[in-house]
Image (cartoon, rainbow, N blue to C red; front, top):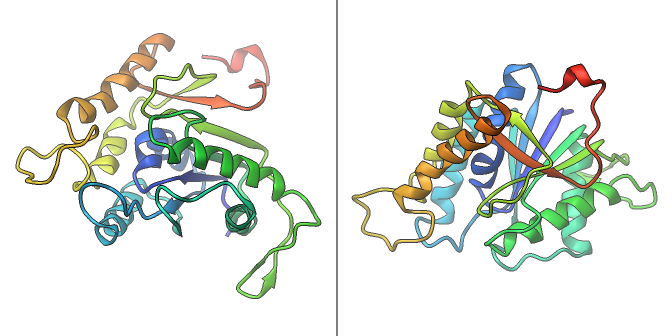
Length: 238
């Protein structure tokens, strides 16, 4: 299956928190979108890997993505090396996306910048003919996405561009809330973490609201790019 967009996240819920408004909008526009999680989030303070698997499936259904896979790398301990790069390359060559979305280039959680550089490097390497990979016993063809964009996560990184996601915030928030074990629950007896406060869940909306304010729309999501962002002509700007 060829996808238009493939979004990678170091953990289940990274994609939902970072760029699910954009994903929901692209799907509504007829694009085929997939998600690949690098780990199962097994080191998360709350819940379990098995529960995160179920929550990720529910979130994918809410967003309407075409496919979701998990590479089962070691949460907290995966690295950007040949072994991990080859596994990511297999996903890129399998789905042949035009655009790849991945973790923030700098963030509070150490897995986020690691995942960012791992996926970015794999996108380049995936286009090299002499790197050979097989999937299910079949040799894969080289493929390099046209664009690699990094969504913004915990830190308020200055975006290189923003996407108007007005009309898609409810779906974004619903997809995030599918991870009920991870976020605000006043009745939970499990330990508190930086993402379990009510302020954090509220921040999903008010951060998008503030980015939207800056470009004259209701809600927006920000991204950074490794190359210049080009537009077809001035009339394509909003």
